Structure formats: structure tokens, C-alpha cells
Length: 247
Image (cartoon, rainbow, N blue to C red; front, side, top):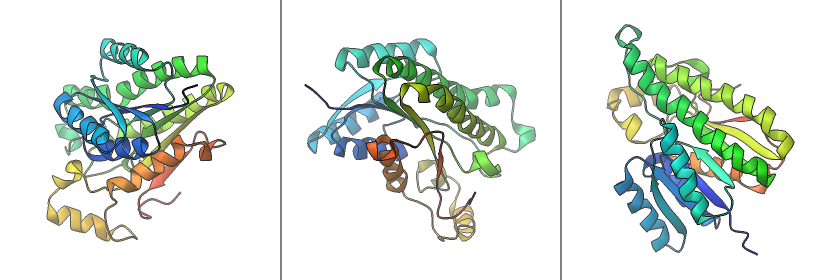
């Protein structure tokens, strides 16, 4: 009997997503690198396969229902189960509130909130039949405290991810499905690199740990929540932030 886990990671081509894909592959999972940037996703999958893991790249726009449904059909052809979903894909932009247009607001929410909803809904559909599964969403410290650098629309969308995680966890628990979120503080990725040295330095000074986190810090937290070691944990928002937010 094949007991290999199948994990879908959205935004898995680079940054946090790539680290998460590589870490889950080390646990023996078949990793689906789901991303709009399919060329980059294929590079990540090829790297994992080249190091003895198992991965496949599938193109998806998580903000579009048809694309999400097509992704799950493609995964179904590869594996009878969906054991782990990591909602990592997200976009953000630093903008003052008066410069946020309706189109910009909707663009952020289409990925960060609607995408998380669509991917989770379809994972829940599969996992409910299985009677097991792990859904893990990447939220943000900005979703708890707001953020000048992050932008109000990004912060609001991540607050939505936090509340959605708790709501889904309550419904999924009866089917032995764990639903949790990881809430990173500032992490050294392409998304924060554009802040500039001065902002990065000033932000790091506000972190008790006095440095930005690394993608691997988040990936390790995800791997824990994806494992059986988190069997009795659900509805949890796990902070990974060097003490930036303590609650």
C-alpha cells in the first residue's frame, strides 16, 4: 500500500514557497509546486527531483475558480489523496491608504483571500472524504497589527486569512482535518528586499531577535503543522517572528 503523502504548495516556485516545497519533499511527500510562474515552478520541481525528492509543477491562478478546479483534477490524476495543502501564494504592495484604488484592493484580495478560500474549499472537499488532512495557510504579522510597509489592503487580507483559518478549523475538526496558519514577521525574501536597506534596518531594530527571519524558519513551522506531531493542534495561528508580535 502506498502511504506517500501528497502536498500542494501554492506560490511554490520561489521564496517561502520554494523553501516549503523543499522541506516537505525531505519528509517524503510528493510535492505539487503550484504557481502562475510555471517556468520557475518547473525549475523548483526539477531541483527537488534532482536531490532525490518527488515533485511536479502545475500552473495555476488561485484567484480563478476554473484554474483551481483544473489544478485539483490534475492532482487527482497523479495521486488518490490530497494530504497537505499549503496556502502560500500571496501578493502585496506598499501604498498609502488614499492611493489604494478599488482595482488595487480587489487585486490583492483576489489572490490572498479568494485564492486561499478556493484552494482550501477544494482541499476540504477531498479531505472530508478521506477523513484526514492538513491545511496550512501563510498569514502575516501584518494581519494582526496592521502595517505601514505592508499596506492596508495586504494587512486586511491577511487578517481575513487568520479568521478564515479559525472558521474552517471548526468545520473540519469533525473529519480529523487540521487547519492552522503560520504567521511570519519580516522574512528575508524578494517581497521584503524591495523595502530598501534603510527600512529593512529600521524594521530589524524593532524585532527582539534583531534580524529578519529566513524562509527556512517558516518552512520548518509548516513541516511541523503538516506532520503527525501536530495531531491535536487546530485553529492555531503560529507566530514565527523573532518576538516581533507576542500574543
